Amino acid sequence: MLNIILELLSSFLIRLSPDRIKRIGRTTGRIMWHILPSRRRIATRAIELHLGKDTKQAKALAKSSFRHSGAAFAELFVNRAIDHRFLQERIEIDDPDLLFQALQAQRPLILSTGHLGAWELLSGVFSLIRGEKQCQVVVRYPKSRALSRLLDHFRKHSGMDMVHKDQATKKVLRILKENGLCGFLVDQNCGRSKAVFLPFLKKTAAVNKGPALLALRSRALVLPVFLVRETEGKYRLITRPPLDTLALSGSKEEQVKKTAAFYTRAVEDMVHLYPEQWFWMHRRWKTRPRGEQTEEVRIF
Image 1: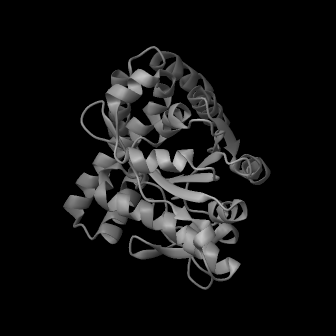
Image 2: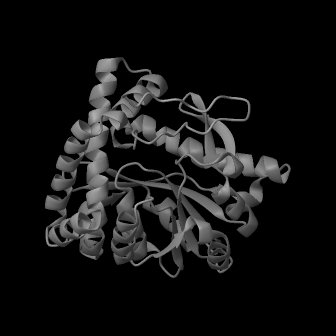
């Protein structure tokens, strides 16, 4: 049944303009707010705890986050429409000199980003501005096979090579050793064995150390990049100064921690600037350090 629903949805959305797709996505987010009470509570409580908002403010912010999350999912179907005209008319690059200097450097480049703003469009954008660099994006698919196939199919419209996280190490290192580019979403919870524990929005969180390890092994630059929504139909591409892993000192463990802390702080800063555009319904703080009880969330 889910297969049929997703196929019907995709066949409908792919015929629409980018603006209509996004409006439908926001409507979907509003519907999610009403039919997913457990996720609604997770998001509201997280905003109370990690941004210090009162219940009324947190609920309003969480509701806005659901709308943005719906838009982010719908933007998956916009990748096919990203061309140089779309780039020129709809996307403002915040610091083009910084961005293109990093892209033109004869160095491996790791893009770090998060589930904030229009993250699904980033691959399509970078397929146009990457220059000569080979590009990959490391992805983690949901448990639903139907949804996974849908995501994989439409993400490939971006022109970027999609690599599943379980197959990432060899494929990513091969591209990075040729001074290529690889993108990672770095703000998801992960298992303890894959994590380094770092502060994130007032509480220790399990941060995936995989991108840090790959950056250090390839001697890459790590460039935080985010695509946020501005006025209707417009986006802003924000970059921060990159971390040069060659400049890091200390033991390997210390360097991994410094690199992971760098891209985690970048996401945290953006969440403070655009809290309504972050994916608050995710159980970001679920995995706890050893000796600390697993995060409990009341679902019912």
